[in-house]
Image (cartoon, rainbow over all chains, first blue to last red; front, side):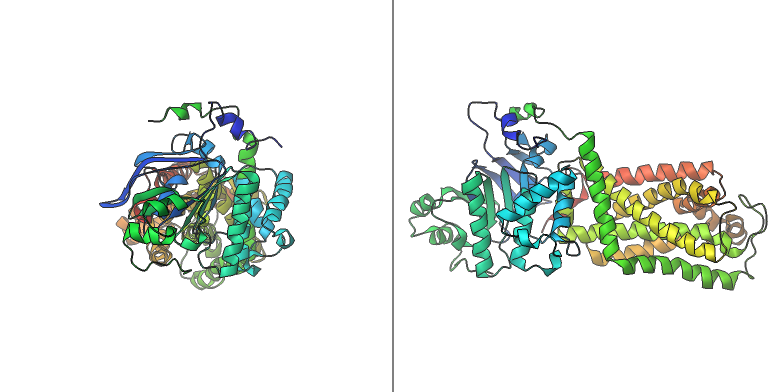
Length: 266
Length: 282
């Protein structure tokens, strides 16, 4: 039961205030000569729903690669519950759940087999996996499909399974890279509802990368990323007020100068 | 930079030996499951060497005589001579195919799910390599079974057992080479070229199809290339092991090459040093 994750808070909860779920500080990254990120910094508090808002090519994917340590940060630090991703990768990654933009389920395997594989990658034993998987599938309303092949699921269902999978090792921080890309309106709303539910019920910190304005609620924390730089950071309503705009959509347009950006589903 | 990381060894239990075992098992299990779902792969992996055995070797039996060279203490049929080469070919294809699946995994994002595991990357990659090798062993024994009915068998049944460590080692070496190549290839399409530039030269410039002394007669420089080719040593290691003997030179070369290839692959997949970084740039 108490093998790894549940005591994570106790482990990192040494100071007076609990560490933030995710801290990105002074991160810069370049591919050869091209700058992808420049001095990016923000915080995702525990139990908050934070949106990383940016157009395609803004640097969202690069930032995700750095947070998940696909490659090392060139400048700056990324910390997950106080653990530096580059210095204590194992500790950091153990506390992080990730849903990638690309579909990553094995289509030939069943939902349960996909989850078991992921559990093994986190060192979770066989019978623990069973109960955890059941529970995780329950939270995304996919419990009835455990023994179906991933191939037979709809796009939205696959995403929900991927969310369940990301929760198996009980991370307290969830990273989602454009999780609604390619889904229809209903599936989008559905995914959003499930993830917001996780934040409200379980107090999980979420970083949700998107370019879709209509996924943002006024109370969400928003990080506006444009061409590798953070243009504004704060509560969606505050950002709108600062930009003198009616809402986060017009505010984003004003900030980026992207005329006519409406945030329609792609 | 950040003082807070000094606390990276708190009360939270680390990943113990049991967790490592679970992880390794999970990776091997997934590879086996995937393989099970792609049975055509198994069939084609079996058909390829059998075509060589039944058609090529039968046709060349009378053309190519093989004199008595170790480990053989009598004249052997050409089919018998090329069997170790065909076994190594199975492992070569298998190693390249599992690296192909790594390129595919990377394109499909599956590689990302592997690499966000909290286990050290060298362990994840080595486990992946072990999984690929395990699958290739199944292919080799299926081939040996068919060959048995063609009356091609080691001198004693013990040969089937003594060849196992040689198969594991050769499989690891060829799989590690594939893994290294997979880190260097950007996209799946480039892989066909690698097949042509790696598999065929490795196979033909080796002792798989003809003994080295024969190559030497024809072309001394080609013989030198064959001697430098680690695939030659994989073949010889297997050839001797089937006869319950150890070819120490081959053992040393295969072991050394396996370590070098795997080390290079791990370095290539390392987040700070690796080639991934350069490649992932949009």
